[in-house]
Image 1: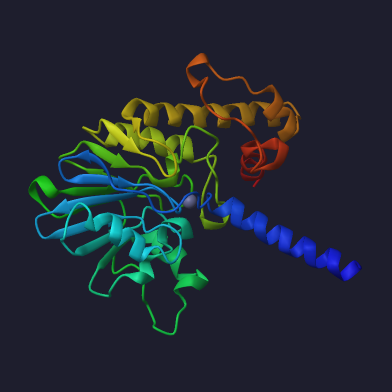
Image 2: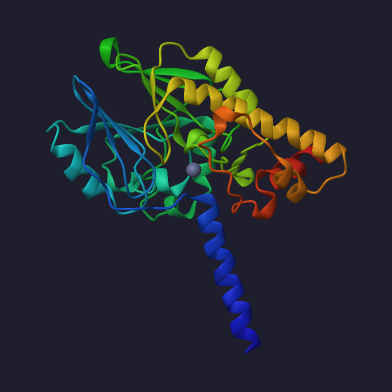
Length: 293
Ligand SMILES: [Zn+2]
């Protein structure tokens, strides 16, 4: 009896960890949705993927949960016969990197350098086949892939959801993939185990908002398309969390009290503040722990 309770607890916390550190897999891989002349979004089975059809092939951003390679290819084949040449992973989580291993070694995998280090610690990439699915190329702050109207600019401005969140800008389309730094209009998941930070995220967004030019629309990690101003506002949303956390901590309030008393300006009306992830204290629990360090 006791053993089964312990086992249930272990399984329960394991499921909790999966739920916490990967957003839901959701429905299966969807059809490629056209965003611009040569750019598509593929929802489902984990995070949103982006597909850039360039002069010599296809650049794919994020590969969803595991075993979705064929479904992704099927979806891509409906819009182009060109081969996959590049994969960019916005960050380490398995709902964005899970099917990297399904693609041939000739595909160049590119991530921010901290994401490569995070991925190297994941069991999914510790295969007998060696380094299959791990990044071939990394960048620190900025790198451009391809050229001319195909140019894809990769940026890193600091910790947010993890310590390796790349912002992927499709220059010609004026569209950016923000990964799970901006998963949707809700409390961000702060994966402290992979260097995520509720203290840094607002500042990271401020730097990205100032440093990235010409973007009009944003592909979110797990939600619908947003406009650039939504991305800018999401930084403010996170800075409001941090300032309220500082004030509440100084006033001796618990994270749960901070969450209950948190009031947002009218423009954040559509945001989902349901705690859940950090328990009743929401992200205040995480931010408090960081502030107390
Ligand atoms: Zn994630």
